[in-house]
Image (cartoon, rainbow, N blue to C red; front, side, top):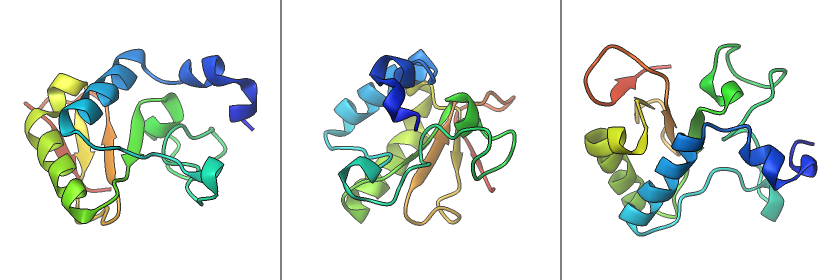
Amino acid sequence: EIAKKGAEYCFGLFKPHFLAGLDQLRADLGFALFVNDWAVGGNRKFCGYRPRVCIGAANSFHKVGGAFDLHTRTEEQMKALRARVSEFGGIYGIRRMESPDSTPGWCHIDCKEHNRPGVHVFNP
């Protein structure tokens, strides 16, 4: 439904600095990062922006354009992604990452501020 409103509308739902950070993260890693795949026949449709009446907590940063659940092609790439985010996430605008123990098939990142240095790893 949201995609039907066009690319400009859709990109406007996200924090611009966060999108730019994701582009740079992907370039620095040297491999593709995936969010939703519904447009190519997959079943992921809520790994980026989530409408207010969608799954997830009412205060989820997905619902304000400040969170992504990232996917990779291989487990090796996922390990590299998580390591990069843990060590250098701040340069990409990433402030938090959900614990890999709680997200075995994806890497949740968001730009929600906190009072800790670096990227805060949290449990859902």
